[in-house]
Length: 193
Image 1: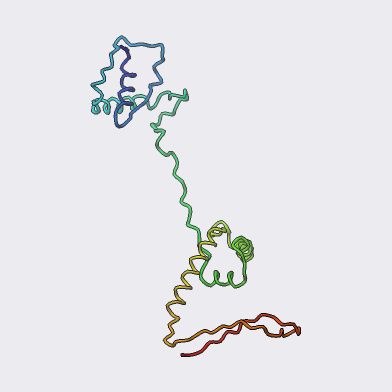
Image 2: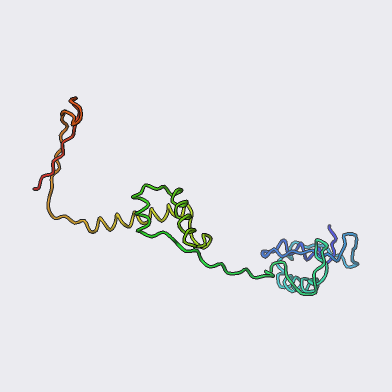
């Protein structure tokens, strides 16, 4: 049977509970043993209310003293889980891609990586801070894919033909326009039905 003092019993009971409370009082050394040692009974692990009250009272009583690492805290009760300083709100970045810019980059055959260089230089030349823009290879790639899909859906909706056409093609060996050699040519004929 193990004989433990009250602090170690409270710690072990907290580790065995569902909430997993656990703390070590730094004021008590390992060599120090209280007169009130107790045996641990495994059947009494469900004493959560006792554990909650003792855990809160222990945390409040040791909050202004030395921590487990040996560093002393100030007189303010600052928990290690509490954020001491608030972060400044960063304004959202501006999306620079639109449908016209995406189609212009596609028409000029500019890759996603090269478009970041071009757009960065263009925005710097007119005095816009680059850190405020949402400008990267992957952002430009995703925007271009999205605008291509929206343009194709728009073209499919607008392209409604009620007439019927027939496409005829035939491969023929004809003379080349520049040289008198014979080359393979495909003749394509579109007929209205």
